[in-house]
Image (cartoon, rainbow, N blue to C red; front, top):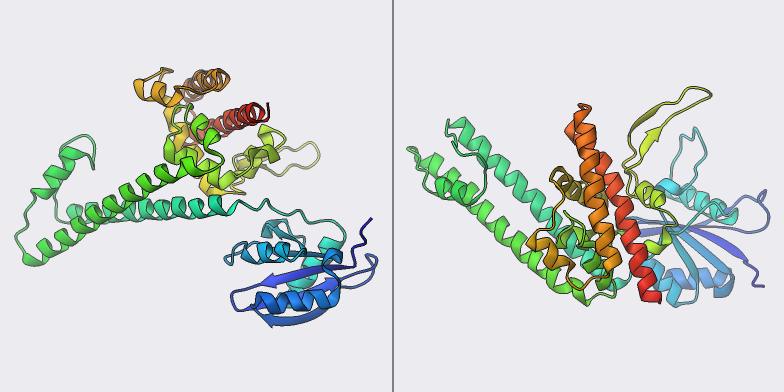
Length: 370
């Protein structure tokens, strides 16, 4: 059996890395070592001075610096995990927070086994996840630009008589508008050009995501998730790249908790108090699931588009998708009939949709293993 000689906590920033290490029993206080520049070779040399690579366990919190440091340490044979910040225990009531103390807390928690590392995504998946998030940023910027345009029209008493905005007819009407003052015309053209630019960027990024997703090893899961109504290419790609390996979730409830769609609770004794969803875990996946859940408002059907997405898939996956349509629509009708707010109903349906996503992922994993 390999004896672990040193448990090392790292507080990683863009420019610096604070180091603390612990050994011995739980009563031995961790040693705050030093703070180094963010230089991976220099950090590796310092870690190997503490103990041989096979006797080191290293942990640091996930942050904006990504997973490059962890991968570099693993290549050197040093066991390293990345921990979600909200999973790191801290002393209650503490009033002093420094990088060195954070590193010490990590070392202490790692020694007693209170830390669980997150699953490192494949580098190809991580790269595509960046592309999907870039598209998400573009969609957010487009929404903001459209709101600015509508604010400008409202200030100038220009109203649209049609039913829906931003369709073909709306854009034709918008391009035909004229304003008397030159300053207003310049402002209008600026907003219109910004909207056109962002629409082109969004469409380009969408096409690139759809082109690159089939190159991943998770392509069967990506195609199978699209059997669900409301789960198009972008939603499926978001779920695959954000959630990674679905088999690490032993139950659908664990996946629901991970994406933050379970109700919060603060109960004591006979008093039971539940609140809004926790919003813990991955917010990108949660938003994609809520977006897909809006399709549950419609009666169950197999449109031509959906049949095309389901063509060639495992019949078990198609059966799960059909059960999801029936179940979610019935729940929507029941909850809306009880006069529940629509947004609350959609979030509840997103939680149930997560269960069907988990079920399809398990079916695909079993088919691949067979």
